[in-house]
Length: 256
Image (cartoon, rainbow, N blue to C red):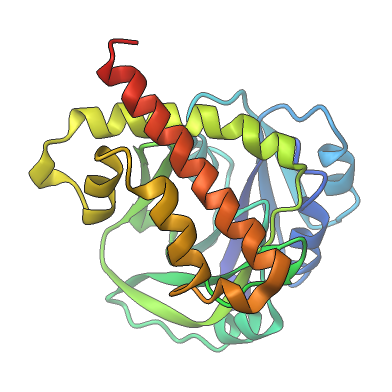
């Protein structure tokens, strides 16, 4: 099965992460990286891996960037493994993909993740499973708030092994991104009626609930208390993200 899969990765200034991700993809005949014009060492790191082919395209939004990578970069394999630059496969996840014998009705597989803080996997997180492995001809991306989701024409199975979500970019980079992400989420919430929203987004629209409830959830139900300072860091980080979104929603309500 591995010979039928092409990993596809989006990058922009990912020198803190990309080497660890690519190291776990040496089994692939070709890895396609769509870069948005990195100005750090991302390109030179990618060029050090003989199975990596980089294509540069200016960024407009995530869905368009993924669709470009999927349809316009010459990928010919039956299956695509879509990875963020901070997704790191484990040996167990590679072994599971190698042994897959997908039925014709299966068009994709959802991947589960262990979230990491400074390289340490946490006991639990809010990070959801994502459809990351799919038949190339059966998939396309649509924009959904600050991120994107892949629409797959067919049944979607589940992978049992965990991959790692291990982002080691500086905290300042993360903080800067939250303003952009929160604005996109705010704009999305404004276009949907109460009945169209997931329960999580209904709580976000209340504005005063999630900034304190999410950290408490991460530390208790999410078992962050087991992870010491790493778990506390993650809980506070999620609270900050929710607080920025709440401020954006308040700003919009006040006419900002």
